[in-house]
Length: 309
Length: 256
Image (cartoon, rainbow over all chains, first blue to last red; front, side):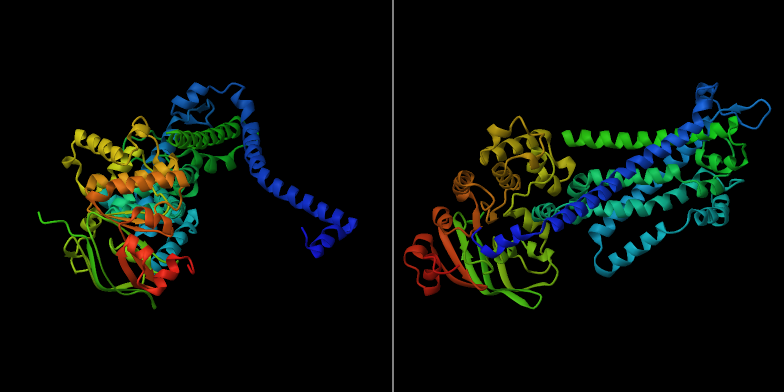
């Protein structure tokens, strides 16, 4: 430091300014810290409130075995029975079928947008796909009721078109946009050096995608799929309108079902606060929470397992 | 089979959009020798190298004129199979770029993309891995780590692996774009040693910034300046008695 000008400035700062400087620094740091921690607070907060409403019933006489294995859902009967097996089966079947449709479609679209498309086509496609994400779920439900319903009746010759297939198609279309945008980000993050290396060895674009990009972007693509699953498990309005709302353990994709979310949405408004029916719906809410938590945890473990190798 | 030919270009020019990066380059590179490409930054030596496997075409707006014959075939003729070309002309990049796969799968990558699953026998694959890694001197170090991710190796091992993965396809030309610039001096020495050992069986073309390196490993040397080929001679001649004044100025370090 032999520049005297620099030196005088370093020393010459007044103590008052120095204190102000420290104070603002502290405030900014605190604000940022709060932002970071708030996510954790919200998650725990939501879980706490849901669980608080559920707890009195959960620990006060609810037959958990019945809840998980029986499909007798008669919460309002004089002899109430809370068997949620059919609802769980409904949620899982719709989600599973939705993912069977959405994963190939979403990841395929992500690969197409990221690797096989350039310029205007790419921009237009991205905008349209993101527009798909902006459609409200009640509108999707409407499409299921009015458009898909008769199509399914015609195509499969079934009496009702409001069933697992209908709901799954809607959920698939709803979760595709998030899969595409997260998936495309994951593919874009793969260093170009990998593509170049593979191409220089004579790989075709398809081989580059299949043998290099998909393995390299595996974690990001898994995250894309799981966000899609999360969206599908938690989606309420569209499945409420499109799956037929009948408590039923399905044995074909053309059966009508009712999901956990649809049950909560449809029944919570009708119950007396604090009643057993009210509380059992919160138990179902906790169950949903548990399902998404397990999905995320599995994903985490999978990713970590992959990393170790 | 006739005597393997190297690379021959006739009036090769290349444009990036409006900018002309190569001007009428005509040269002949011989099989079984190491040819060094030297010149200051931006002189077009890497661009020239990247013409020989047509990897330049990944960039939009690249246009070429003239002819490049590799192994007796015009590689810019219409209908040339890029896949087949790149199988015969391997490339090593400036930064080691092993694929994010296992060591084994990196070595086998070329075989996997050029042959169908049914055409590859298990024992042949195992043999290819061992032979290729032995050829680059990695076998002893990596034979128990074939399942490890290639990206976790040291830079020197990564770069040697990048050379090894070209070998199972039996290329005839190896293009190397400053292959040692990311390595420390000891690793550089060992990779240079490897290049010398490979020389007899391949046409090796190596771009380097490092004139001492060009002197150490090349048999012939090409000096380029502003997209033009200035001088192409035996390495010792080029360094000791350059014909062109610009070559003399460059090899004596007066510019560059």
